Length: 112
Length: 114
Image 1 (cartoon, rainbow over the protein chains, first blue to last red):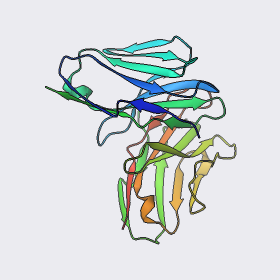
Image 2: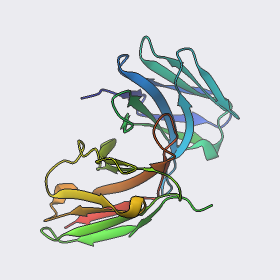
Image 3: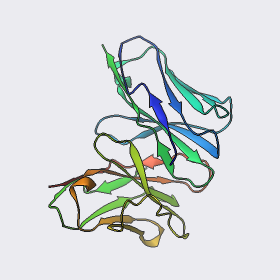
Image 4: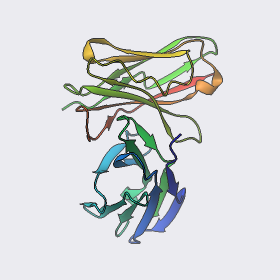
């Protein structure tokens, strides 16, 4: 059983605050690490797919880093906005198959 | 273009009845996945189809669950003799193929077994 953990489980921030969350995953059999954003009543939306140790990806105010040797990834949101409120999921893809093993998610709530 | 679609969006069924959930992947996507999220749980892998290869059924929780993919496109997830613990949101995703690809998710089917 693969263990993918996310912390914190939930986070309340004020508009304009910057924030970050953690995803930890197995350091063996690594193939890719995915980040998704899931808003209530919508489909999970892919943010990043990361494959290389030391990789850093950015999309607007959101960025992510990857450390495959120690098995963690950080997602950063700069200057949070209310529309950033969602559950952020990370998912581990092993080299043994293309299915994703998801963490429990971090639920972010941004107050105006 | 059209994304992944699923039907029905909501399904309420009585314990013991069979249900079928449908997924229409993005046209041209060869890989199709089923996941579910039970209350208070994370997203859990169920089954994976890739092209004409035999599906990876390693995530199916019991033999009451089965899935098929006809013509390499539409997929149906069937749950026989539903139990209350089957209540969950069932999500389908598709991707361009093998390798490192984003998976595109449908809106899900919320199944409630009473």
